[in-house]
Length: 402
Image 1 (tube, rainbow, N blue to C red):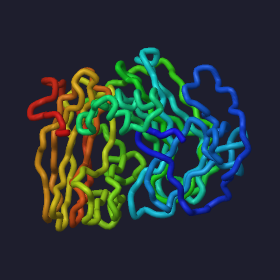
Image 2 (image 1 turned 90 degrees about the vertical axis):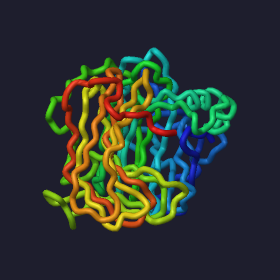
Image 3 (image 1 turned 135 degrees about the vertical axis):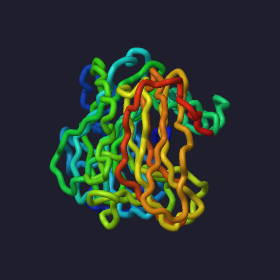
Image 4 (image 1 turned 180 degrees about the vertical axis):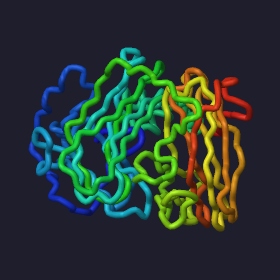
């Protein structure tokens, strides 16, 4: 079975629907001109495997609560689709089907457009489709050599701590409708120079069952960049009044780790975002809610602010961060700013960052360190342009520690 740079195949023991586990050999439908995905309709089986589709892999969790399958009962087109189902949220994990696509200068300066047809059945978490653009030397050579990521890195003599991987494009579209018929969903990412890998993913975090079919990845002329307006709040759903799908919830896979929209306590409106965790984890890690912006903020000075409330927070702290990824300068981050721990009522935090002129991805994080005891709430976040960038990274900005 082929292995993705971030995961292997995993198997569960749940049967939400009858899934075909032993399909006869099939012939993949001819891909249309310009299609970048292998086996986009999941019609071709992997050689010598009873059900795995050729060209695709699944994420690694080793959890018995998740099930991946190649489905013959529910298909949008052709005779096959793929499915993912999960029954537990004790360990937060993004379960997904994925495919790695090598690209070169022929795609630089264009938009990569990814679409899937999706069908939800009893979804109680958040399902998603996702497209990422990376400059990833190890990932490219792993695919070239047909090796897992770690052996490829060893062959290149690149230690994990020195991995030069750089995220240059990112869009994930979450959806959380519990039951749907087939719906087409699309994401679009600009492919900047030096990109050599695109990663395609479709899956869910939380519980439920989702079916995916008829994927497509094509290149199109890049859309013009719309300049972000100074003074406007660039964040979607900054007060967490919506369904949460505008935010990335980033969590290490630690038992008991949670990020939830909470309506019991809010600074304003009806809701805030609540973080909690267990007390066990391999290392202390960053977690939180975040959003990603693109080229529209390049060359601008950004200010991220939010109101935070901590309750009995020990062994860690709540803080804000801005990160900008530049093909020429790598990853830059804002100054550390103020941290909050122990117990505090609503307190405003703020950080600033000068985004480089060639930045292609900028992250705004409402973060904290985990695992910890206690709770963190954020509300009323704002990301705004306060002027042109004064320098490559701004006063106090620094490169993240590896």
